[in-house]
Length: 116
Figure 1 (cartoon, rainbow, N blue to C red):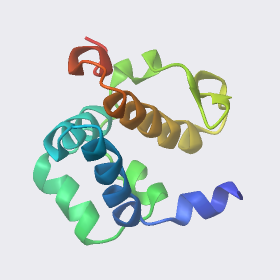
Figure 2 (figure 1 turned 90 degrees about the vertical axis):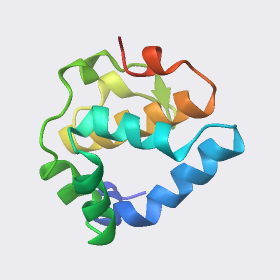
Figure 3 (figure 1 turned 180 degrees about the vertical axis):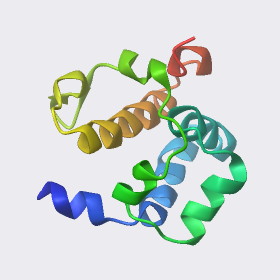
Figure 4 (figure 1 turned 90 degrees about the horizontal axis):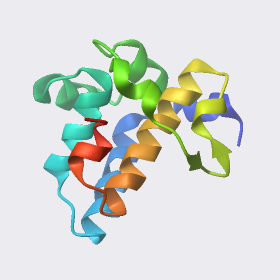
């Protein structure tokens, strides 16, 4: 897939898919929101505004208050690629989020997901 296509995708269109994925595994929307807020620095209200305004992934991460400094500790494989090896900054942030959602869906403890 053309990476610029991913950048232009509305976060609001992918968010329900994240919810569906984690709820199937017995996790909650609140847990999902917690990991998104941990990664991006958004609070609940600002996150909801991003969803309501249907911003794309590029703007979602560009407008994020603060990427968590511990996000660099996120490692592993997502879509067959090691996240720590992704050179494009925006693509790496998107894959960080994908990796956190996967960890949540796989039942990993929140403390481990949030790199505490």
